[in-house]
Image 1 (tube, rainbow, N blue to C red):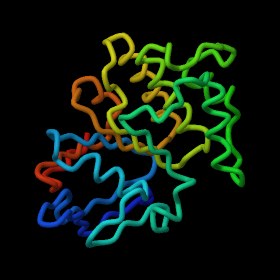
Image 2 (cartoon, rainbow, N blue to C red):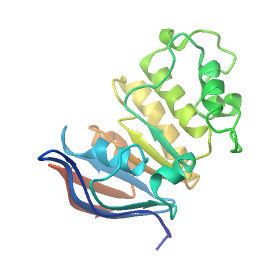
Image 3 (cartoon, rainbow, N blue to C red):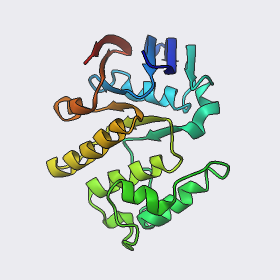
Image 4 (cartoon, one colour):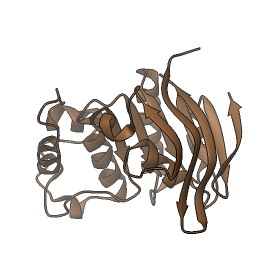
Length: 213
């Protein structure tokens, strides 16, 4: 068994009487890919945001890399289903700006990160003119800048055509082969399954099953 990179112990996230997460417990092992499935509102995005240190659980304990997630944030890469890019900037300019958030870390250069995801760092078009697939790959490059030890990817295939989704899948397969630890959510199970070591299913805020492949 690999070392645990993250642990979630009896975690609930409450908004008044509504429970976005209900008593979730899981151990995520290093160098594995976890596919997180469930309907809209099942709690998938909330769980990723808790692991990323962007939300604090109401109850329970979360540790990432032996720290509270907020303290490990520089070692966690979180890709939202929203692009989190400045439309008027080029991909390279977006990444150079994002790198300033990690002044004390040994980051990849913007050029290195863009080449990893198959984008031309010399392309001078603003990302507003990019296809959805190119925007998603730029978002992934931004996440990879800080060389994170845990990747949290919320709907990485969002609104892509089949060819773009398959290109993104190939990138994730390469990251998995390189030993990255990933947790990803998607509604396209059949597309993402080649990357997955473990399939987790959520329903109504609870983790209902875990299937090791």
